[in-house]
Image (cartoon, rainbow, N blue to C red):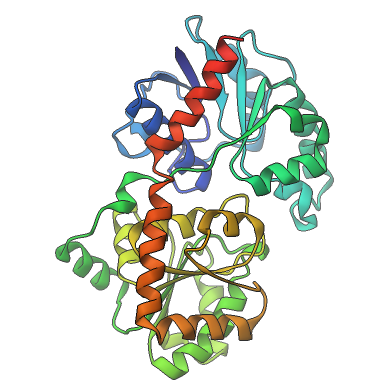
Length: 367
């Protein structure tokens, strides 16, 4: 069975969808499936290389993206391919001549008003919704995403499989001491306890609540808060300066995977205050790396973390202060959370997850 994977989204491997695609191709390769990439002409997929060996490119223009989704991907399919997998929520307006699988990560554009405020956005996502009817099968990355599909797109709910995201093998490997010292020097890590956040900074991520809670924690414990992924560092620094904790907050944009894994392992708590997720990859990565997790209680993160994390009301600052304090002041609790988290993360290793995709592919190809 030969699988075509739409890798047109792969640019710099800095988004969750890019990491998902990279991990899925790696997992499929590990279980013996042949995967060819479409969307980067002339570049073979190298599953054991970062970003599948695809050379970094600038982000496509909206028009180029639209052209590819509607027409380009159909033209790129080779004759000896049995199935096409589009690893993000889009599909051409017509069916392929072979089965097609589309991954639905979340329904943010349909659930949250602030993500479709412009007429152009509403028109685009209305078209996406119509075109999904042409897909042979959909994969939801969590039961939470399936519930959203059942609520918002009930006509599609009958052809959805739930397969969780996987975790890249690097997150399970212990960093050596040289790498730990390198990251500490690079970021200026000096204090303990150390609280870490990794992710986006849009409204649903709710980072401001974590920062407010951290102010109280840092006053008591004289530690530091590390914020990874921010594009607007200057704005973030103004916010923490107004709260009087600027000397205890370290903000940095994107980090390499090796540095990020090391940073997870160098922190005492991973905090994730998001109010809405389709899955919640950073908490899963933190569990694999052996870090205790405190997270906002939303359906997807609850599903991913299971009983390995402490879940709190996402926007309640007092709840955050209480939960963070509980973990920091109870080492035995933190150790139990780490042990349970590693076990849970092991269930999400990409080779195990990829086997579930293989079963879906085979059912479609042989139907």
